[in-house]
Amino acid sequence: MWSFGPFFILAVIVERSHALVVRGTRFQSRDQTNGVTLHSIADDGLDLRYTTNLTVNGQNFNAIIDTGSSDIWVIPPADFTFDNTGIPILAPFGGGNVSGVIGFGTVGLGSYTVQQQVFQNATFIDVGLVEDLGINALIGLAFESTQTSPLTATLEANGSNPIAGNPFLYNIFAQTPGQDNFVGISLSRTDDLEGTADASFTINELDPTYAGVVNAPTIPVVAGIIDRWRILVDNISVNGVNVPFPSSALSNAPAGSLVTILDTGTPTAAIPAQVISSVFSQIPGAVFKVVDGLVLEGSPIAEQVWTVPCNTTTIVSVGMGGQSFPIHPLDLSAVFINNVTNVATCVSQWSPGPANPDDFDMIFGDSFMRNFYTVFNFGDDVSQAPAGSSIQLLSQTNPTSAQQDVAKVRTAQIAAASSAAGAPAATAAGGGPAATSPATKHSGQPRLVVSRCILFLFTIFAFALQ
Image (cartoon, rainbow, N blue to C red; front, top):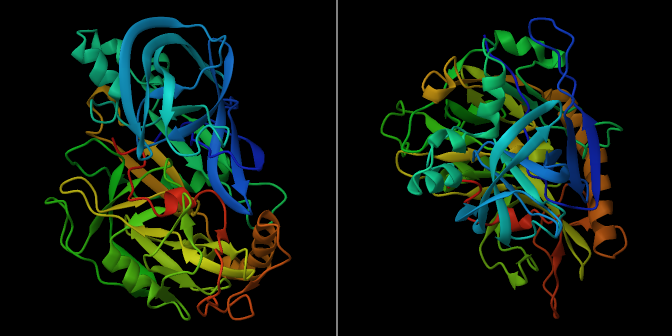
């Protein structure tokens, strides 16, 4: 039996956040809940990140939950006190680094508390937009290993007891012996204009809304050179037609399959360029081009990107564990507004990510994971994980309903993005919400304005992949 638990995602700080109270009920039909609140943080109508409240020595932090790493780090206020080991540590994250010292303190999450929990007290952050967006902590939900836990690696190098470096989640599991060791997460969607967002995050509990997940196939975690939440992808299809896959970078992957990481620390997705081309070339109106005015960190992006009609209703589906999972058309692209021409362009949220030999072929981040409820099972003996670990998935996207959402949602997204750009309501390139003809060339320095996740969109994916 799978156990379900809290899952946290580091939220990029933007203008709006939506508090979501976790609904958790013991799978054994108990009434107890873990009391965790999950926040969907949105910008210009886009769900970018998901955060929760984490406390360390009584101090509140806005924490990402990251299935790609296993440590906790916090950006402390000036008056923060903790047990300081004085041991320096440098941890890679998000294409940058987090440096500081190793400390211990009392860490709380919902109704869970761990005394003498190890964490990184960050004194320098080189991760784009983290502090600007209000993010000041991260909690990892990956397996414990020296590859995914700089804390563990650093403590071992200093001759410390390995138990001292146990991840927070492992310490929670140790408090509940005899229970299943799993976590469950459903990511909300607020960009579909819903008044409330249906999100949940539970530890050793199952949200009754998704009770059907217990009947879902068990998908074994694929072994690799680094311990990750890694599973096989059977196929990707466009309107029911499978696209060709390249050979996997993993020697143990069956022919015709690719291997993906399920990573809540990644807002979008990293996909082999061949697969991206095969998928988007089958979407009517999609164009591979240089988008006029598209910038990254102040510099124009000269590379070609896939654009799609902003109101495309094409259904892309992913096959995993013998099941098919439709992806909401809104999760295929993000709206960009050229603030000179006031033209909206919808750009792919899939970035070409180079495969890592014997590690992974793809990364499915939040834009994929919003479409299925995910249960991460650590197995009966957490100390042996990922041996015996697995994942179960339950689809959350109804293709017909999703297609009906598109027109009204994209109209609202374009209006929101135009407002952020300080311009009147924009139209899609070509004059309508479905058109994607190239933006008009002009003099001056146009700039496409969209949510701040653009920084993640075009970065070669290092998201939480230590």
